[in-house]
Structures are given as C-alpha cells and as structure tokens.
Length: 100
Image 1 (cartoon, rainbow, N blue to C red):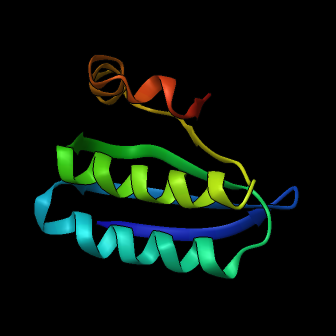
Image 2: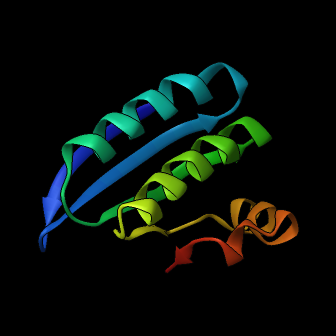
C-alpha cells in the first residue's frame, strides 16, 4: 500500500496504490483520518493504482466518508478500475460516494 498526498485546486488529492485488504486497511484508515483531521477542505481519493479492495478497505473509506459528511465537507473518489467499481456497485458503496 502506497499513498501520495498533493494539493490541487484547493483540494487534497490522495493517490493510493496497492491492495486495500485486511492487512493494509487499518494503516490506510489511520493515514486517511490523519488527512481528514488536518484538512479544512475537500478530499479526493484517486484509486487508479488500487487493484483489490476488501470489506476492510471499504470500511476504512466509510469511516472517512462519515467524518467528512459530519463536518460538511466533500470526500470523492476517482479513477476506479473496472473490478473495483464493480465491488462498489455490488456493495452499494457507489451510492455513498461521489465517483468520477
């Protein structure tokens, strides 16, 4: 699991690569929640480099999404690979997040 952080157009963009599976979900959630707490604006998570996501990975995104909604900020996802998009669609997560 690798995460790069950059600023673009007033948003924090996180580029995630690797697997969002059980061994990586908790460190990913911790890193993501650190960004949520240190950022005042929107967050975009670029998942182009993610080739697998488990229920643990989905949970990490859900926790961050809830925190962002509670603070009236936007968390969006982008560049999901087809197999990752299918997981989001089947699980109903594609209705919980703005995905581009």
